[in-house]
Length: 384
Image: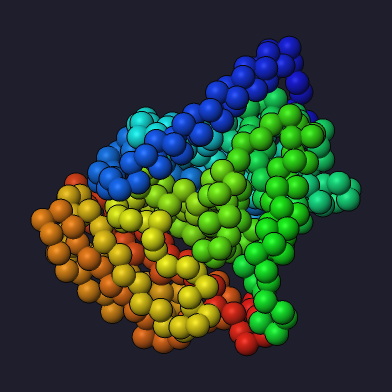
C-alpha cells in the first residue's frame, strides 16, 4: 500500500493550487480558441503534440481485453523512460496546447478508465516511485455502491495526494449515444436532463469527495455523437475518446484521441510504435463526421483536409476495422493543403469501429489519425 507522508501532503496542497490555476487556463484557452475560431492551426511540431495512453486494469486476474499485467505495465514505464519521454499532467498539458503553447518534445500523459482498485494497488506505487502524474477517470455510482472492483474514495484521495488527477467518466458508465429508435423522440429538455444525471452529477460527486472540478470527461466505451459533443462544449468540458491518435492544438477538444494499451495492445513492440507517433495534421477537425452517421450509411465516406507541410501524400493510407486498407484518394487542393477521401469496400460491422489513417512525414516518422464510428441496428442495439 502506498503511504502518505508529510511531503506528499504538502505536494497535495500545491497540486490543489495548481489545478485552480489550470482551470483558469482552460477557460482562458477556450476563450482564445473562440476568438480565433476562423484561424487555421499551423501544422504540428514535435512540441505541439501529446500522446495520451489509456489503461483499465493493471492485473493478471481480470479480463484480458481490458487488462495488462503489472509486469507489462512496468515494462511500458521503463520504455517511456528509456525513450526520453516527459510524462505530463493531462489537464495542464491540454490547457497549454489549447492556448497555443508548446510542450516538451515526446510528451505523454498516462490515463486509466473506470478507477479500478488495481490502479491504486499496482499502478500507483510504480508511478509514484518515478514521480509521474497520471489521470484516473471514475464512475461515482459503482464507488458509492461499494463495488469491490473499484478503488474507494479514500484510495482515490491517496492517489490525488500523490499527484493524480481524478476526473469524470460518467455516473454509471452508461451508453450515452445509443437510443432505442422505437422509443419516443428524446426532447431537448429530456436530453439535457440525461446528460446532467450522467455527466454533471458525476462532476458534482467528485467535487464533493475530493474538492476538485477538472472539466475533463472521458466517454464511456468511447461512444459519442454530435449532440453530446455540442453539450460538452456548451458546459465547458473537454471530451476524451478511445479512438487512437495523437493530440495537438488542432484536435477537436470535444473528442480527443488516446492509444489503448490493454490486452493484445500491451505488446512492447506495438507500444513503442504508437507512443512514437505524431499527429496527422487534420484541419477543421471539429467539423468531422458524427460517429452515428454509420447507422444511416453503412459505408460512410470520410473526407478531410490535412496540412501538406509535414506530409508525404503518396504514403497516406486509411484502414477500416476488420477490413484492412480502404480505397483512399489524396488530392493537393492548395499549396499547403491535401484533401483525403476514403471509403470501405464493405459495410461496417454493428457496434464500434474506426478508420485509421497513417502517413510518413518528411523526417521518416509516422503520422496517425482515427475517425470512430458507431453503427446501431434497427432496434438501437449493437455489440458492446
